[in-house]
Picture 1 (tube, helix red, strand yellow):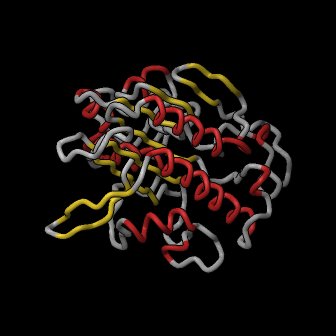
Picture 2: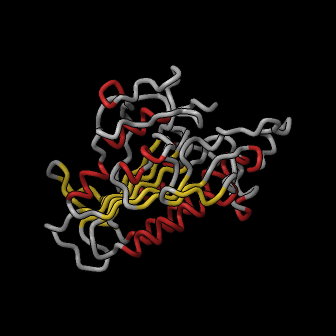
Length: 286
């Protein structure tokens, strides 16, 4: 399960800063939401019969819903590197890690090569504030953290939430997970601030940090990267979402992401139509 792909991402584009009137020549704000292991059909807008995702469905209805696309890799580290660099894993050095694995583990000595140019670095050179709140998985050692790849702020876990398992976990590890069964660190900037990460509140805390980032940078262009840890196993959700979904714990996790997204989209701003290939297509504004 630890090598399941990260297969779904959402992008929110804003034209203009949120506290000022929209201007055609204003640089766009960019928000990318990346959900780890979310399946293609797990949202209402893609046909799921029981998982309720009204806020993401609204974004699909008022924006664009893509039904055909390619991914650069089927597992976490190389696919994330490709998303941020725009280069295939064979070119950005992420086609294989030390030890012959395809993703980074807690004992991996390396990370994405520092000479790779990320979207955050390009945007930072153009005056953007850059922040990532979520799962990184491109190297957990100091030389490979987001701060070395163009991000001003980082709050999240450095690799998958199901890694770093304790030596003697309970027998029903995935049926009744407890955060203490995994020794995954929570990093703020370059400092470990919590270990093990309390995963029951991690989706909420990513959202809170994202909202704070938006509030502090309303008067300048910003790039916000929000790569959720969930729904990668082990599955955790906040107390208010326990048994909320008809689809069980997995549905609870997805519905919490959807509800938290509602807060980010509201914090980012309203919607605005932009011309694409000669026609007006609504894109969310932030």
